[in-house]
Length: 250
Ligand SMILES: [Zn+2]
Image (cartoon, rainbow, N blue to C red; front, side, top):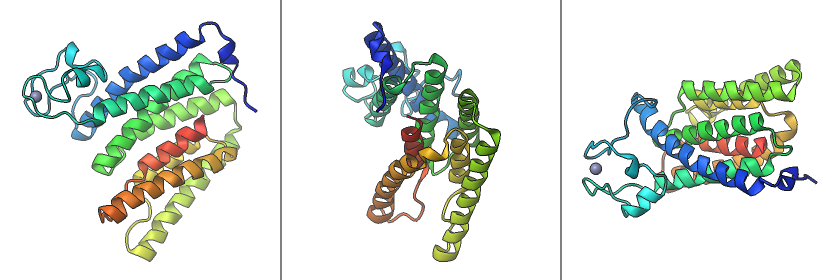
């Protein structure tokens, strides 16, 4: 039975609220990152603009969730509808940050920061994969870097880590080739294989059941939605990998 010593910390509610608020702000960054990165735009210093009227957005347009509610889901300048996915991503990021803090046991600031960094990267990868059907190498490399530091903190044997990586890589390539034979299309995209390999760096074999269960359920939902309902041949599996990985990390 897992214990939550963090709850014994007097500042616990404050830490949780700060994490949730930080999650909202980082969720806003996820929406900007997932919009700009696939379009080759500068996501560090570039200013946020309305995609329709191109007006530069000011601070009052960029308050997570609140701006969207206050402007009644419309751009203040041109009145074009603003998708509900922006506040949804911000709220999800906030919830996941809070979840990371909730299960942090014991509370290690570096580990919590690394996991929150992974939340941002995995959320952005999921959104980009759903919209563009690809997983940018730069973000996958960032996931690999964070996972490497997590593994280093856990002091896992390098042989175990390398064996896990090779196993995932070989299994991924096997699924890809199998799909080519059975359905005449790759069973798994290279982006999915690279992301799964990067994630495997931080996940010991004991977390495989959680990863496969959560990832499998999300993959089935995606297959039902894109394959069955919308008759699409290419089903984005990135979100399934990201959901399985997040559950396993926790
Ligand atoms: Zn506008």
